[in-house]
Amino acid sequence: MQENRILVVDDEQEIAELIRDYLEEEHYKVEICVDGAEGWLRFETFRPHLVVLDVMLPRIDGLEVCRKIRAQSTVPILLLSARKSELDKILGLGLGADDYVVKPFSPKEVVARVKAQLRRYRQLSSMPEVSSLFFDELEIDTEAYTVRLKNAVISMPAKEFEVLRFLARHRNQVLSRQQIYEHVWGFNEYGDLNTVTIHIQRIRQKIENDLAHPRYIHTVWGVGYKFGGSAR
Figure 1 (cartoon, rainbow, N blue to C red):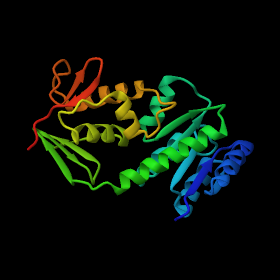
Figure 2: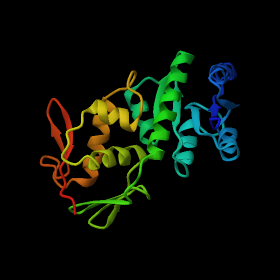
Figure 3: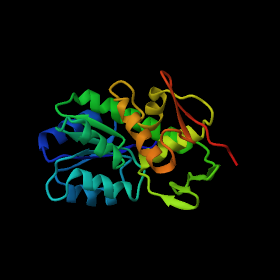
C-alpha cells in the first residue's frame, strides 16, 4: 500500500510536532513547516496527499496558502484556527478547505478527521465520471470543475461545485443536509450542517433567476434538498 504523505503547516512548533507524532503513529509520512511561504514551497516539492494548515501564519497566511493550493490541486485541506466564528469557518471552507478544526483541539480528533478526508478523497478519485451534466440552460463540467448558465461561465469555488454536482447527479432525489455534508466534507461527527445551507444559498444566487421560485435546487422542508432541472 502506498504511504500517505501529509504536510503540517503551523507556526506553533509544539503543535506541529504533536500532530506529526500522532500521525506518524498511524504510519503516515509527515513533514512540518512553521510559516506559510515555506509551507507553499514544501507543498510543491513534497506533493502531499493531505495538508493540515493553520490559518494564522507568518509571511503568507493560511487562507492564501489554501487558495494557492486549491488553484492547482484537489488534495484535502484541513484548516486549524483559534478563530471560532461562523464567518471565519465559512470563509475557510469557501476558499476550498475540506474541514475546519478550532483550537484548542484533541490530536486524536485531528487524526480522525485526516483519516476521514483521505478515505473520502480515495472514494471520489475512484468514482467514474461523466464529463458533463446538462439540465435546461445549465451545464456542469465535472472534469474542468466549471459551470455554465446560458453558455456563460459561472464562478464557483470547489465546495460549491461539489454540492451542486452531488445534487445534480441525484436528480429528483431528496438529499438531507447530513447526506450532502458527509459526501462533500466527508466527516459527520463534528460537522456544522449550516455550512450546507449557506453553500446552497450561494449556489442559488448564481444559477437561479428567481430565488423565490427556484428552477434547479428545491427545498423539501424538514427533509433536505432536491435537484429538479430537466436533463438534456
